[in-house]
Image 1 (tube, rainbow, N blue to C red):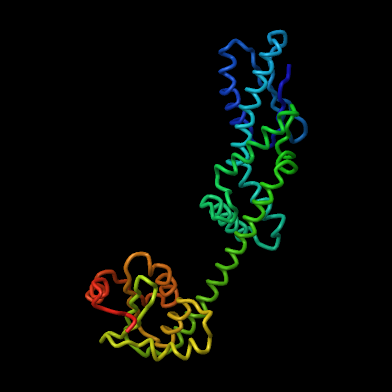
Image 2 (cartoon, rainbow, N blue to C red):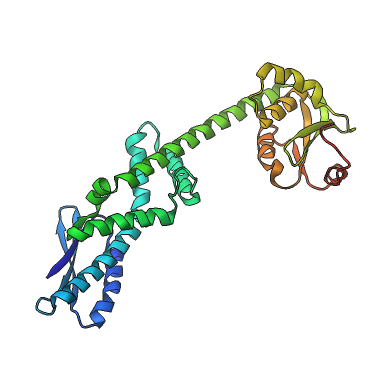
Length: 302
């Protein structure tokens, strides 16, 4: 008697092996469970069978529900652990045909990172939440069905899950394009730095915990005030900390930039400055100027 039939494509040996392992509990109780295979076109149908004449109605329902439980868990694992990456790749190929293969790979990496880091794109789309959502849909389907074709099930019964994967891909594309624009922006800034004559041999950037900064020369003289007032008036209030700092440094045109900061408060902008002033940035975490700042004897805003 066939209790369930599952239509799969691609590699299925691991799935069948795990299903057989799960069925051992029933075999040990004396039930003769058999797993068979039938090929139909590109699909392999894995059947879950039990010998007829051995089951009372109560045992039949119990065995059927246990097998459906095993299958539901295995299918949810397969979708999230194996099929999900394939689905993302397919979405990228279908929706963003104009990207080449290398670009699509980077977008896929971005999408997988968003999923793994649970980016907050949705209220709860963590691994556990996705797995539970898919598992629930499979369990609901198998209540009234004895055959499940995985490809069709994902396409027609997991539309909400699939729609969220589409949104993840869209976000991954946005991040990829922003990264491209950022790199192009850095190239432009680097060009301006390279063509400028050096005005100051060395400047020191001191960043406090609140993110305020001061630029001083090697003698300790504050340099940023005279350069920033015109920039702020020209660009208005909607300018970022990094915009102001990078603009000031490009205008000052130093040969070397020494960045003084403590902890993570300066890591992001330090990376940007290192990209713009390539080979000309020194990161400092413990000189006398740093100690003065950390002990409160130095006020970088005065």
